[in-house]
Image 1 (cartoon, rainbow, N blue to C red):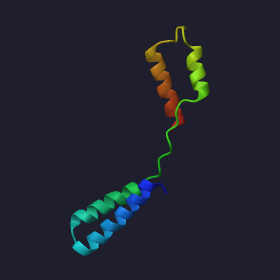
Image 2: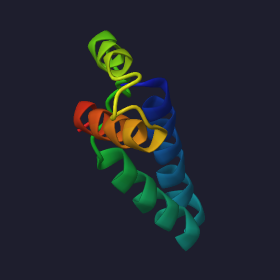
Image 3: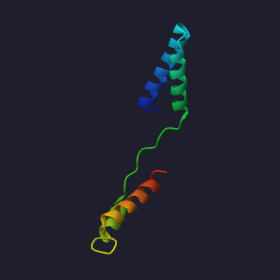
Image 4: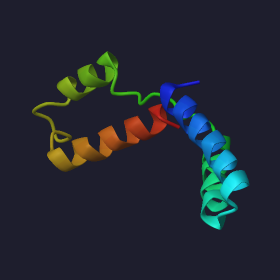
Amino acid sequence: MTDLRQAAQQALEALIDAANVLSAPMFSDAADALRKALEQPEQREWQGLTETDWEEIDNKKDTALDSFAQGAVWAADQLRELNK
């Protein structure tokens, strides 16, 4: 469990305790929202372009495919695949 998830879990427990003691709906609502967030799977670490990707970019310099727009679309596609 990451530090952020541990902190969120501690906050959830505190909200549940506060809701039980103070009977304030806002604590229960916040606890429910935090519980739902913690039920979500942990996010993977972002994956950047690989050395092979950078070589492919370098190989396209001074060709018909050497434009900023085409490069941006290609990079977006590569990153989308790596970070599914």
